[in-house]
Image (cartoon, helix red, strand yellow):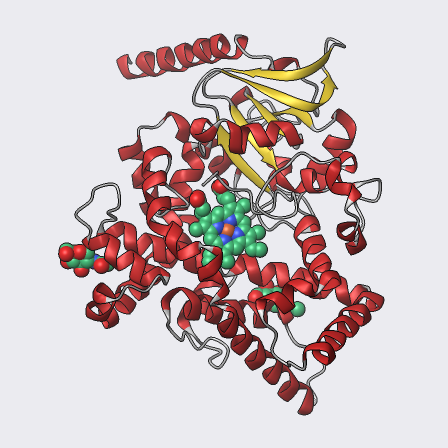
Length: 468
Ligand code: HEM
Ligand SMILES: *[C@@H]1O[C@H](CO)[C@@H](O)[C@H](O)[C@H]1NC(C)=O
Ligand SMILES: *[C@@H]1O[C@H](CO)[C@@H](O)[C@H](O)[C@H]1NC(C)=O
């Protein structure tokens, strides 16, 4: 009885507290879609869309780039694809919009507490350690490795065609290609996924997300919405939950970190002495550093490696799959790419290009950017304000009271959805044909003058990143 009363009191107090917090912001006055459910708000329909982003695209068309949607338990979520708002949240405000606790813990359940999971000062420390391995100069050294992997894949495809295979799974082949490429580039290690169909790691990656986070149960959705209120040490126990999704993540984490450990063991003594800037040397040296702002402990090193395996693998594989898909629908663009490459080969006399050659392939690069624009592999980011704040908008929106607002006041703890995919398709940024495949838009320099400077590539939000 007493327990029930205490629980009831907690629920009531949290409700009152939430209403108090909410009263300090202006999110509740924004317009937004009707909510099919009191408890789930719009969160169920968001997770059961036929195509990623369909609902968000429609909502942006209807309510403008900044709107509110229903979170779980009757809360309001601020959703925005507005360029100025995104610039403020992701860059100007620095660390004041961290990942929400649910995202950070879920990411830790998959990869451990590596750079993609940690926040604030810890994130800064991880970044400091990793930066030398990700300079433009360092990345350029990978080109021959990538060319070697790509050549192996094209040879495999030629062999397949030779023996009469008419249909093959491009997505699966590319996933194996990028696994080999990340192994080569980050760890100087041959996973051999292209040659070995049964490679344990590539098997474990296969459909990692569609097997787990796609179509969650309502219970899990409601449960996860409470993670922001659960103390971190208790939240960490979610790793051991016995359901499908959590088991799948645990399996990946164990396998990837186990492989990371073996890779390091094989090379430990050589790596500690080297001055090389490849990721693994950088990580092993950081583990041995005396300097607390540059040190990563053992668990952090292994998590970092698992993070790189995951972050560098599906993302690039899926993006390349989308590129080939669009090119198959636009044979005229295929032809242009071939002609551009042949012309450059003729001009340079080189079959394998240098970085400068690659950069000179204007139309090919435009096709890559157009793919990244239309198919950002991470379509939404989930953030949260850590102080009361005011978010500026470049496109004012009309609120429920009929007023035009050009800023949103958010209380500390406001949940925010960073709408990457809808931003990438805003007509105000990309033109009236923003929904369509049109690589030529990237050859038009006048477009840039109209845009707010965002992101690390071509004003796309696709690689949405913290400032360095
Ligand atoms: C098309 C390919 C890729 C896309 C679309 C992509 C997208 C993203 C996005 C949206 C984030 C931000 C996540 C957040 O702030 O919550 C991110 C972070 C990150 N990505 Fe990628 N990524 C790609 C390829 C790669 C590759 C190839 C690597 C490494 C080899 C990589 C490593 C990372 C790392 C380490 C972070 C965390 C950065 C930080 O928190 O400071 N990504 N990526
Ligand atoms: C291609 O492979 C992916 C996994 O990599 C799988 O999800 C998909 O169903 C496969 N497609 C076909 C047509 O077999
Ligand atoms: C990190 O350093 C500790 C102590 O020197 C060592 O036992 C451990 O093997 C190192 N781990 C990695 C991943 O380098």
